[in-house]
Image (cartoon, rainbow, N blue to C red; front, side):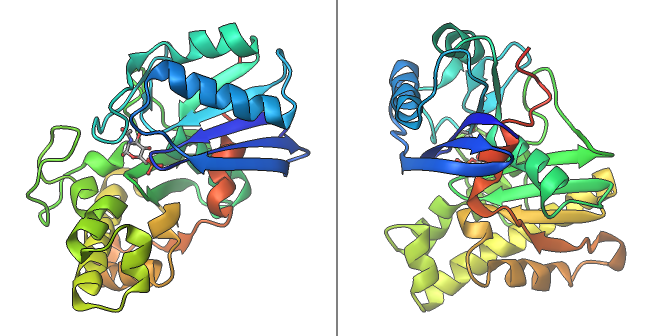
Amino acid sequence: IEGFSVDLGGTKTAAARIANGRIEARLQSPTEAQADFEAQLDALSAFLAELGFRKGDRLGVAVAGRVDAAGRWGAVNAGTLPGIRGEPLLDRLRGRFGARVSAINDAAAAALAEARLGAGVGADHFAYLTVSTGVGGGIVLDGKLLQSRNGMAGHVGFISTFLGRDRCGSGRVGTVESVASGRTIAAMAGTPDARAAFASDTDRSHAAIDRSAAAVAGLCADLTAIFGLDRIAMGGSIGLAGGYLARVTARLSDEPPLFRVPVVSATLGHDSALLGALLSERAAS
Ligand code: BMX
């Protein structure tokens, strides 16, 4: 893996210079979630300039939201990135940064990286889940990332769960995301953010984290029923938080044996989307 990459999520934006599959330099800042498309492009440009990017260099961009086959970018959860509503991402990126640019959903990018270089190696039917600002995913079957023309494939956070009642920013009621996301954990725990919920040892925090883990365990079982998964890797700031995976596994052990898929920690940590953005098959043609 060689080039520059960007990972623009609901909470943080990271950019990296990568050579021989290793991250040589990395920058990160909070995402301006309310910003419009132009402002997001400007933020990316500033990062890339700082990393020494020159027009024509290889660039992989991973973003929260769906990226369709034409390279248009729209939030599925409009509450997360309200300014992103079907923007001509790939066209504008190529105009600014040259032809060797690709764009892909952030969780899909991470799934590709984990499948090829991380926790998914050796699994034929593999899924990566991120539990973070939102709940996202990527499905890799026989080494190939499942992608759709409309960019929705893999948006597993919008599957519904019996634990859910609220409407999420996608408009759907009772989604896994509405129950399990970092935002919901913080709201239910009464903490400023999800990190604080993990740090605080209160009944409310425990209940919020456990409810999230229960919804994600159900999601793992559902995905196994659909895709016959032989492994799932868990990532994202919540997914990688101490004790979270153990709670998911505990909940999953209540499911019938056929639905108890092995769930492991993502091994590329917070860099999976940065690496995967440069593995995208929806290529930098
Ligand atoms: C949401 C959705 C996905 C994204 C996932 C993880 C939006 C803006 N986001 O389900 O596209 O992959 O969250 O996103 O519609 P993150 O912000 O938690 O990294």
